[in-house]
Image (cartoon, rainbow, N blue to C red; front, side, top):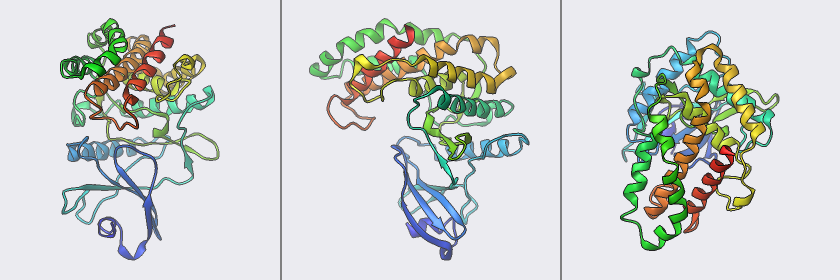
Length: 335
């Protein structure tokens, strides 16, 4: 570990390092030094196979935001190694990167009040708006078909013939519902919306908030920043912020889409984007919420039928519970 750290920082300044956070993708450490604190990550190359594309995207986004004289938040910009690269490849072919640690911040893991939702949505909208004049063609597709509902639906259908009879029977009710609603994905696919640079992972805890004032301080986790439509960013905010239960909850009867939080997300998002959002995008926001919630149900169910080969699970029915949870949220959204 010391060898990795000193690719970015002078050895004599390093004081300590420890595992940090609860992320499920990368291995993350906080490094304390006499020159300040930093976040060190080993990039998960099983998921992010194009490491150079990921890092080049982050560099381009950081550079573009730094040129925006009125961008109101701090910018997540990578540290550079001794080789003047934003990453370091070790002898085991692991890829590492480092960012400055942004002090005096907190995150909301769950949203309980509309007042918490507004600054989250405003921050993501501000981030998208500030990138609106950066050509999407300059960024790599770091996860092909990440938010492609028809592709995800195809993965689910391909999982059916190879599923065990017991899992297929357990999944039948959820599968029937998803296939009944699959037209949502076709509706999204035919929309003629502008391609933008979007975040693609708009969970509440991807916004760092100032501890004292609880105002947005920085947009983080930029690995999935790539071309798309803003519907997916709005939809993922609705999916992750409005659910009255956590997405692993099997208390299905208690799951509801909290409308005041939905409205705060919509208001914050639109306030930030203002004139840069066109009428077609504005009118399709609700469809974006339906799309992403149903798409996540599809992904959980496909993984269940594939014997839990993608998502980390803690018990045999975990992915099926997650599927039913998202279906209940989807039903509540429609109501």
